[in-house]
Amino acid sequence: MLGAAGVLAARPRRRSRATWRAITDPADLGVLEATRLLHRRELSSVELTRACLRRIEARNGGPPSFDGGPEAVNAWVRLYPAAALRAAARADRRLARGSARAPLLCGIPVGLKDLYGVRGLPLTASSRVLDGNVATQSSAVWVRLRAAGMVLVGHTHTHEFGAGATTDQVGNPWQLARSAGGSSGGSAAALAARMVPAATGTDTGGSLRFPAALCGVSAIKPTRGSVPTAATIPVARRLDHAGPMARTVADCAALLRAIGSSARLRRLPLAARGGRRPLRGLTVALTDRLDGRIVDPDVEDGVERAARALKRLGAAVVVRPAPRMAGVDDAGYSQIFDTDLWSYHERFVTRATLYRPTTAVTVAKSAVGAGRPDAAAELAREQVTALWARWFADQRVDLVLEPTAPWSTAPRGAGYLTGYPALAPLLEFAALWDATGFPVVALPAGVGSRGGAPLGVSLVAPARREAVAVRAGIELQARGLAPPVPRGLDSRLGG
Image (cartoon, rainbow, N blue to C red; front, side, top):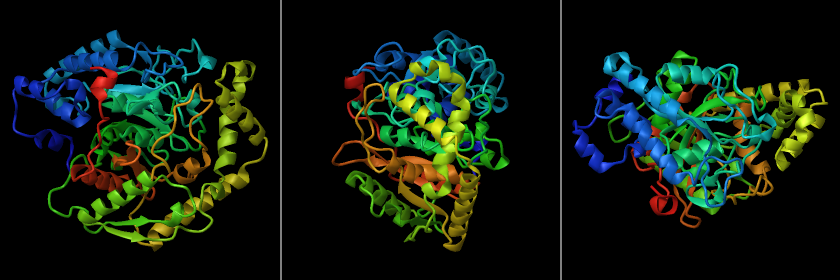
């Protein structure tokens, strides 16, 4: 397993600044690419941060706005350029004292989803309900990223309060008329448009994974409880997961090392192994959870492409029936979601007219659902989680491969009035793994031949087995499933 020191050592032949600058704009660098240059002092954090700020100016489509225009990506709800440059200068001084003493992520710019508190800065969940709110404490995740020397560029837009899957105020860099997904849509769009190399998201029913799939980037939903959610605005506290987003799985793993609470996460792999068949001995299952559901043919192609790549890398790909009565509805998800959502939002009852329309409906529905006792739902969740854990063990399966979402594109709505045709298929695929708390690595598997959109697939592992899914994701991206770049990015978005 390659540690932080190994990542910095396992680098290509040293280039001069003039050489690599002729090859790329610093804003195009991924997390681990940038760390090598920063630690070798071939690039400064100030230079990198300025490059990201220039890219944001060129591609965001104007200053951050609440609703976002149809010709704008509008990934950001707020930017902090002056503070970011000061933080970058501090990171440079830290790096100058010696690379070995500086954390791996020191000097890397990052965007925080607008649910993560930063003491003294606004925190609004992309909602007028929280207009004027200022965080009184920093989220546990930001405390850890700040300690790692990361540079906060701004807060990214979320679907209002994280309670949905469209984030309509954000345009997808692949095509601005398409949804960037939600609820971490701003983070995914910022990554896909090469505005920052790293971002954070949250996942309650798929909110890290949906936007990653629709925007062609990567995300890791860790085992529930592995990353603290303290001082983060909750969606449903018993279902919430905090996690990293970046363009590659390896970059996500580097972020997860920094924010995770367990030693196992600090040992996640960061680089591909050598050899022709690095996944030999791994068993990956395709299940019948797809059966009877309408799935975009492009998405099916993406799953098949990923399965073929896994076989080439030495993994055994098998077909196994999913356990019966082990879906999201069986796990008490809806009842738990309603109870937890309302327990937070009942404090805003006098401000309900300030919600976006569909968020108001979601919150009102949760008030009704919260009136029912949820002890049975919690028991059902525990039973389904145990059933899936036994299934992985009995079937001798290491990972499940499945679509992240049943379709690759969705129209961008206007203020959440339109968007995804229905949420039920999304919940069935993705929310199950929030109910069980199992870790999932989400990554793109090419671009659809019909829709021209990125195709998202997920690698699901049993609890606390993130390393297995991360290893497979890194190998896939190193051997043929590299993250796609939106076509015509420069001409459509500028920069």
